[in-house]
Picture 1 (cartoon, rainbow, N blue to C red):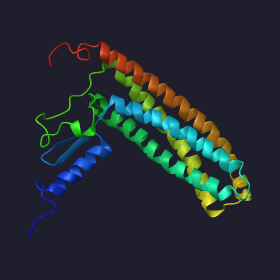
Picture 2: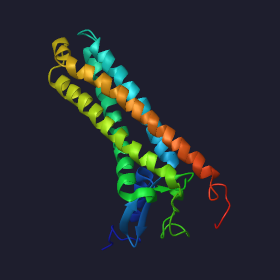
Picture 3: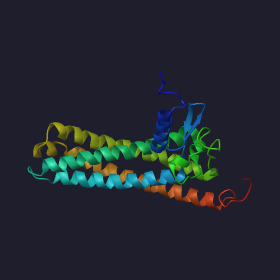
Picture 4: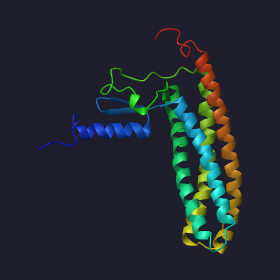
Length: 222
Protein backbone atom coordinates (compact mmCIF):
# COMPACT_ATOMS: atom_id res chain seq x y z
CA UNK A 1 0.00 0.00 0.00
CA UNK A 2 1.25 3.47 -0.88
CA UNK A 3 2.19 5.60 2.14
CA UNK A 4 0.54 9.01 1.72
CA UNK A 5 2.73 10.63 4.35
CA UNK A 6 5.99 9.60 2.73
CA UNK A 7 8.41 12.53 2.51
CA UNK A 8 8.85 11.71 -1.19
CA UNK A 9 5.15 11.74 -2.05
CA UNK A 10 3.51 14.65 -3.96
CA UNK A 11 0.99 15.02 -1.14
CA UNK A 12 3.74 15.62 1.41
CA UNK A 13 5.35 18.24 -0.82
CA UNK A 14 2.01 20.03 -1.25
CA UNK A 15 1.58 20.19 2.53
CA UNK A 16 5.05 21.66 2.92
CA UNK A 17 4.43 24.29 0.22
CA UNK A 18 1.10 25.25 1.81
CA UNK A 19 2.87 25.58 5.14
CA UNK A 20 5.45 27.87 3.57
CA UNK A 21 2.79 30.13 2.12
CA UNK A 22 1.01 30.41 5.46
CA UNK A 23 3.90 30.75 7.88
CA UNK A 24 6.69 32.34 5.91
CA UNK A 25 10.29 31.11 5.81
CA UNK A 26 10.93 28.23 8.20
CA UNK A 27 14.15 26.36 8.80
CA UNK A 28 13.93 22.60 8.24
CA UNK A 29 16.55 19.88 8.16
CA UNK A 30 15.71 16.26 7.53
CA UNK A 31 12.03 17.02 8.14
CA UNK A 32 12.63 18.43 11.64
CA UNK A 33 11.41 21.98 12.39
CA UNK A 34 14.21 24.11 13.84
CA UNK A 35 12.58 27.55 14.08
CA UNK A 36 10.54 30.14 12.22
CA UNK A 37 11.79 33.29 10.57
CA UNK A 38 10.41 36.15 8.51
CA UNK A 39 11.56 39.16 6.52
CA UNK A 40 11.56 42.75 7.69
CA UNK A 41 9.19 43.54 4.83
CA UNK A 42 6.69 40.98 6.15
CA UNK A 43 6.85 42.51 9.62
CA UNK A 44 6.19 45.94 8.13
CA UNK A 45 3.27 44.64 6.05
CA UNK A 46 1.72 42.91 9.06
CA UNK A 47 2.03 46.04 11.19
CA UNK A 48 0.33 48.13 8.52
CA UNK A 49 -2.44 45.56 8.11
CA UNK A 50 -3.00 45.56 11.88
CA UNK A 51 -3.33 49.36 11.74
CA UNK A 52 -6.02 49.03 9.08
CA UNK A 53 -7.91 46.32 10.98
CA UNK A 54 -7.76 48.28 14.24
CA UNK A 55 -9.38 51.29 12.58
CA UNK A 56 -11.99 49.18 10.79
CA UNK A 57 -12.86 47.30 13.98
CA UNK A 58 -13.37 50.61 15.78
CA UNK A 59 -15.62 51.84 12.98
CA UNK A 60 -17.65 48.61 13.05
CA UNK A 61 -18.06 48.97 16.81
CA UNK A 62 -19.25 52.56 16.39
CA UNK A 63 -21.85 51.27 13.91
CA UNK A 64 -23.06 48.83 16.56
CA UNK A 65 -23.10 51.53 19.22
CA UNK A 66 -25.31 53.86 17.17
CA UNK A 67 -27.47 51.28 15.38
CA UNK A 68 -31.20 51.17 16.01
CA UNK A 69 -32.98 47.90 16.77
CA UNK A 70 -33.66 47.14 13.10
CA UNK A 71 -30.06 47.73 11.98
CA UNK A 72 -28.42 46.07 14.97
CA UNK A 73 -28.20 42.50 13.55
CA UNK A 74 -26.43 43.74 10.42
CA UNK A 75 -24.09 45.97 12.39
CA UNK A 76 -23.30 43.14 14.80
CA UNK A 77 -22.44 40.72 11.98
CA UNK A 78 -20.08 43.28 10.44
CA UNK A 79 -18.47 43.86 13.84
CA UNK A 80 -18.11 40.12 14.44
CA UNK A 81 -16.36 39.74 11.08
CA UNK A 82 -13.98 42.58 11.92
CA UNK A 83 -13.20 41.01 15.29
CA UNK A 84 -12.20 37.83 13.46
CA UNK A 85 -10.01 39.78 11.04
CA UNK A 86 -8.47 41.71 13.93
CA UNK A 87 -7.71 38.47 15.74
CA UNK A 88 -5.90 37.12 12.71
CA UNK A 89 -3.91 40.34 12.33
CA UNK A 90 -3.15 40.39 16.05
CA UNK A 91 -1.83 36.85 16.14
CA UNK A 92 0.72 37.87 13.50
CA UNK A 93 1.84 40.65 15.82
CA UNK A 94 2.21 38.16 18.67
CA UNK A 95 4.12 35.75 16.41
CA UNK A 96 6.62 38.44 15.43
CA UNK A 97 7.02 39.73 18.99
CA UNK A 98 7.64 36.24 20.35
CA UNK A 99 9.94 35.34 17.47
CA UNK A 100 12.16 38.38 18.03
CA UNK A 101 12.06 37.91 21.82
CA UNK A 102 13.05 34.23 21.86
CA UNK A 103 15.16 33.96 18.70
CA UNK A 104 16.77 37.38 18.61
CA UNK A 105 18.09 38.78 15.35
CA UNK A 106 18.01 35.33 13.74
CA UNK A 107 14.21 35.65 13.47
CA UNK A 108 14.62 38.23 10.71
CA UNK A 109 15.98 37.11 7.36
CA UNK A 110 16.74 38.88 4.13
CA UNK A 111 13.65 39.57 2.06
CA UNK A 112 12.43 37.19 -0.64
CA UNK A 113 10.10 38.20 -3.45
CA UNK A 114 7.73 35.35 -2.62
CA UNK A 115 7.23 32.63 -0.03
CA UNK A 116 8.06 30.03 -2.67
CA UNK A 117 11.59 31.41 -2.87
CA UNK A 118 12.42 30.64 0.75
CA UNK A 119 15.53 28.49 0.68
CA UNK A 120 15.10 24.93 1.95
CA UNK A 121 17.60 22.06 1.81
CA UNK A 122 15.16 19.81 -0.06
CA UNK A 123 13.49 22.46 -2.19
CA UNK A 124 16.42 24.61 -3.32
CA UNK A 125 20.14 24.59 -3.95
CA UNK A 126 20.71 26.95 -1.01
CA UNK A 127 20.68 25.45 2.47
CA UNK A 128 19.31 28.43 4.36
CA UNK A 129 18.08 32.00 4.09
CA UNK A 130 20.73 34.35 5.55
CA UNK A 131 19.66 36.36 8.58
CA UNK A 132 19.66 40.11 8.46
CA UNK A 133 22.57 41.81 10.20
CA UNK A 134 20.76 44.78 11.72
CA UNK A 135 23.06 45.36 14.69
CA UNK A 136 21.79 47.96 17.17
CA UNK A 137 18.80 48.70 14.93
CA UNK A 138 17.24 45.34 15.90
CA UNK A 139 16.68 46.02 19.60
CA UNK A 140 14.14 48.87 19.19
CA UNK A 141 12.02 46.66 16.91
CA UNK A 142 12.07 43.78 19.40
CA UNK A 143 11.30 46.04 22.37
CA UNK A 144 8.50 47.81 20.53
CA UNK A 145 7.13 44.43 19.45
CA UNK A 146 6.53 43.60 23.10
CA UNK A 147 4.70 46.92 23.60
CA UNK A 148 2.55 46.20 20.55
CA UNK A 149 1.75 42.74 21.86
CA UNK A 150 0.59 44.12 25.22
CA UNK A 151 -1.52 46.80 23.54
CA UNK A 152 -3.09 44.25 21.21
CA UNK A 153 -3.99 41.91 24.08
CA UNK A 154 -5.82 44.74 25.86
CA UNK A 155 -7.79 45.65 22.72
CA UNK A 156 -8.43 41.98 21.97
CA UNK A 157 -9.93 41.52 25.45
CA UNK A 158 -12.27 44.50 24.98
CA UNK A 159 -13.66 43.56 21.60
CA UNK A 160 -13.86 39.88 22.54
CA UNK A 161 -15.93 40.66 25.62
CA UNK A 162 -18.24 42.93 23.62
CA UNK A 163 -18.71 40.40 20.82
CA UNK A 164 -19.38 37.55 23.24
CA UNK A 165 -21.97 39.55 25.19
CA UNK A 166 -23.78 40.70 22.05
CA UNK A 167 -23.85 37.15 20.70
CA UNK A 168 -26.08 36.36 23.70
CA UNK A 169 -27.89 39.68 24.15
CA UNK A 170 -28.29 41.40 20.79
CA UNK A 171 -30.46 44.35 21.71
CA UNK A 172 -30.15 48.06 22.37
CA UNK A 173 -30.08 47.27 26.07
CA UNK A 174 -27.33 44.73 25.43
CA UNK A 175 -25.30 47.44 23.72
CA UNK A 176 -25.85 49.84 26.61
CA UNK A 177 -24.69 47.14 29.04
CA UNK A 178 -21.31 47.13 27.28
CA UNK A 179 -20.82 50.89 27.38
CA UNK A 180 -17.85 50.66 29.77
CA UNK A 181 -16.10 48.12 27.56
CA UNK A 182 -16.80 50.27 24.50
CA UNK A 183 -15.21 53.31 26.09
CA UNK A 184 -12.25 51.22 27.21
CA UNK A 185 -11.88 49.78 23.70
CA UNK A 186 -11.55 53.30 22.28
CA UNK A 187 -8.67 54.06 24.63
CA UNK A 188 -7.01 50.70 23.99
CA UNK A 189 -7.42 51.05 20.21
CA UNK A 190 -5.72 54.47 20.34
CA UNK A 191 -2.91 52.94 22.39
CA UNK A 192 -2.52 50.07 19.93
CA UNK A 193 -2.38 52.45 16.98
CA UNK A 194 0.26 54.50 18.78
CA UNK A 195 2.42 51.43 19.50
CA UNK A 196 2.01 50.16 15.94
CA UNK A 197 3.17 53.50 14.57
CA UNK A 198 6.16 53.44 16.90
CA UNK A 199 7.19 49.97 15.76
CA UNK A 200 6.76 50.93 12.12
CA UNK A 201 9.12 53.83 12.73
CA UNK A 202 11.65 51.43 14.29
CA UNK A 203 11.32 49.09 11.30
CA UNK A 204 11.86 51.99 8.92
CA UNK A 205 15.02 53.04 10.78
CA UNK A 206 16.28 49.45 10.68
CA UNK A 207 15.65 49.18 6.95
CA UNK A 208 17.64 52.36 6.35
CA UNK A 209 20.46 51.15 8.62
CA UNK A 210 20.61 47.83 6.79
CA UNK A 211 20.50 49.49 3.36
CA UNK A 212 23.42 51.70 4.37
CA UNK A 213 25.47 48.78 5.73
CA UNK A 214 28.13 47.02 3.61
CA UNK A 215 25.92 43.95 3.29
CA UNK A 216 22.87 45.99 2.38
CA UNK A 217 24.71 47.85 -0.35
CA UNK A 218 26.08 44.61 -1.77
CA UNK A 219 29.64 45.11 -0.60
CA UNK A 220 31.65 42.66 1.44
CA UNK A 221 31.70 38.89 1.36
CA UNK A 222 28.73 37.41 -0.54
